[in-house]
Image (cartoon, rainbow, N blue to C red; front, side):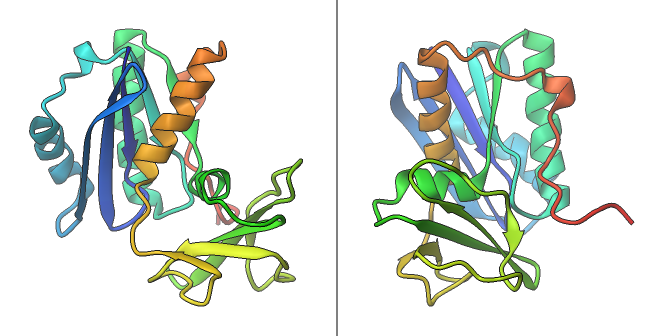
Length: 192
C-alpha cells in the first residue's frame, strides 16, 4: 500500500511517501513562494502520481489557514477522484503521540502571534486552546521557533512523517478514512 502524507500548515511544506509502512521519501523545505506554486514541484520531486497512491493523510492544523486549505483541497480532490481513503491528522496531536515525555504532556505551536496548546494525560486528548487561557502544567513539547522554553524542543518536526505513520496504523486497524467532502481545517477562532 502506498500512502502519501502532506503537511502545509506552516511556512515549511513537507510530504512523506510510505510503501507498506516503510518510509520511501520525505521532502521538506521552507516555503519562499505560495504553497499552490510549490506543490506541483514537490510532487514531481517526490516522483509520485496521485493514481499510484492507495491512501492519503493530510494535516488539518493547527497552522496558517490559507496553506492548510490549499493542501487539504488538493488531497480531498485526489481522494474523491481516485476513490481512495483520506485520513486527517492534527499537528499538536502528532507531537503528543510521538514525543516520549512524562505525563501529562503539553504540545504548543504558534500561529501568527498566538500560541495554542493541547494536552494529553494518558487517557484523554484535550481540545485545542489558546495558551494564555489558563496555561496547563506538564511536560511541554514544541518547535524551537514557536515556544523555545518547552521541556522538549524540536528544530524540525516532520508532521507529514508522523501523520503518515499514524494514518498507516489507523488503516491497518480497519479505519476506512473520512469522507473527503466533510474535511475542513482546524479553525482556531470563530468566523467573523
